[in-house]
Each structure stands twice: as C-alpha cells, then as structure tokens.
Amino acid sequence: MRDSVVEMIRATGAELGSARRLLGEAGGVAWDRLLDWLVDDYFRVVALGLENIPAQGPAVIAVNHSGAWGLDAFVLDKVLGRALDRRVRFLAAPFVFRTPILGRHARRNGALPIGPTAGVEHLNAGQLVGVYPEGIAGLEKPFTERYRLRSFSPGFAVAAIRSGAPVVPVGIVGAEEACPKLGEVPTLARLLGVPYFPVTTPFPLPSNWTITIGEPIPAPARPDGLAARRDAARALSERTRTAVQELIDRELADREHLFD
Image (cartoon, rainbow, N blue to C red; front, side):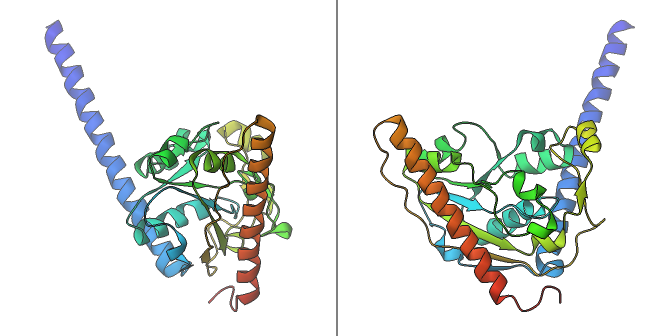
C-alpha cells in the first residue's frame, strides 16, 4: 500500500512537471509572438547600421536604457536575433532571473547575470556580449529628462580591454515615449523585490522606434598597473557614452513623426 502511494505521488509530480513545462513553452511562444507584433506593427521598429556589428570575433554591444519598463531590452534582443547569424549574450540584473516570465525569457535567450567579470569569458571565446551601462538609472529618470544619458558603469569597458573586444555603441529612440516614467511607488517595489516600480501608462504607447548602431570603438591595449587600467576603462566608457548620446541626438533631430 505504501509503495503504491509513493508511486502515485511520483507519477503526479511528473505529470505536474510536464504540465509546467508545456505551460512554459506555450508562454514562450506567446511572448515571442507578442514581441514580433510590437516590433513589426506596433512600434514599427527601424534598425540602422546593422553592418557595424562584427560578423565574427568578440564585441561589446553598449546600449542606452530607456522607457519606464525597460521594454527596449526585449525589443533589441528580438531585432538582433532576427538580423544576425550569431547570438548576443546580454547582461541582466539578478532580479530579472527571479521574475517568472522575465527570468524564463532571459535564460532561454542566453542572458548572463551581471557580475564583476561578467561577459569576459564569452568575449574571450569570440562571442557578442550586450550591456546597458546606465543600469536601472536609465529607466528611473523622469520623462522630463528623456534621452539624457546617465553615467555609464565602466565594467563593460574593463571587459572590453581585458579581451581586446571593440565596443559597438547603440542608441534607441522611441522607448521613452512608449513608456513615459511619470513617477514611482517605492513601497510596491520593496514588496515585489524589484529595484523600482514606475508609474506609467497602463500599456505602451505606439511610438515609432529607431535603433541606430554606430561604428565599433577599438579597445585600447591593456596597460600595466592598476591605476592605468582604471583610467583606460573610464576613458573607453566615457567615449562610448558620448558616441551613444550622439547617435540618440542625431536620430531625435532627424525624427519626423513620433506617432503614425
């Protein structure tokens, strides 16, 4: 009798596990279709300069972070996944992997947890690594400061110099208007265990998006001495920040219609 009960529990557990996997797969398909619709029909995303991403060898893809919900990360991942014959391994904050839907999507697309040496191993292996050097600060800025880049964390520059990988600057325009940050609710953020919880529109607005990919910035030779390496990383980080801001400013100046 006891063996039968144990076997029944095991069988039930296996069935529940299979059901969870099926639901996860179905959710993944639905999420991909939603992103396809957002990219093609809702945001009408235009990608410029895709040829600037190296066809082989390592590179760091450095991107501005904008819009209250960080939807830009998913849109860019979808666009590059379609356009390139190689995967971009984006770095993601720890809370992303703890979130059911976001975590599943991040793992399925090869995202890497942020860490002191995150991405170096993959760059040394000749892969593409994507970063949002502003971090959450890029999403937290109010709508009145849209498209004004926050400080870049130099970690990506350290990784680029260590691996000899060039840095490819990328500017995204459209996300700030799609999800304008109007405020935030710190109490709710603490309850949910996320860095912040924004007040924004209930659903993204149908703004026109442009993704502009600039020319690669070569990483300097790795200097001797800790102080010299710090200075080199800061210089590369600031040069990249300037390049991304210039891409954004140029696209804003050329933009004819915010909404179609």
